[in-house]
Length: 173
Image (cartoon, rainbow, N blue to C red; front, side, top):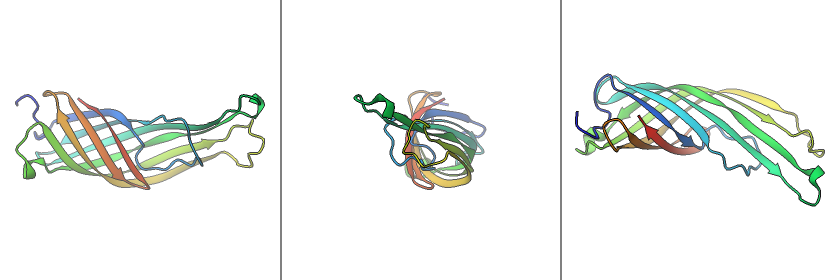
């Protein structure tokens, strides 16, 4: 295999670690000001040059924090957090459109479970809401590409749709 060879060999294992806006499961917060991206970890196993199967997971933690310097007793923080995990299958179509071995272009479908919770701050006296937990099936698709810096290290980015649009990226090993 040459330096920078994209995922085209049977039995290759690729691990992705990155950040994203989640796997398309929307936040239940009315608004958020945390700016914390979801942390993603996924893995792919190549069945052949064109197909791979794998698993994915993502941890989401976001919040809305209300701060009022003149009246600190009115400050509160509502939190949306949870896990997404499941299986995915990818079709690597790079060999059909380019001969560049540094790039891996793919389309993937995923199917999994999303377990999230919304916790309202008890200090927020005007809050008439109750905390709740959500556990639901999550399915969607994404388009991704990977650029190999060396034989074993690549940069990747993915974007797709499930219940909403999501995008992210990171490192592949």
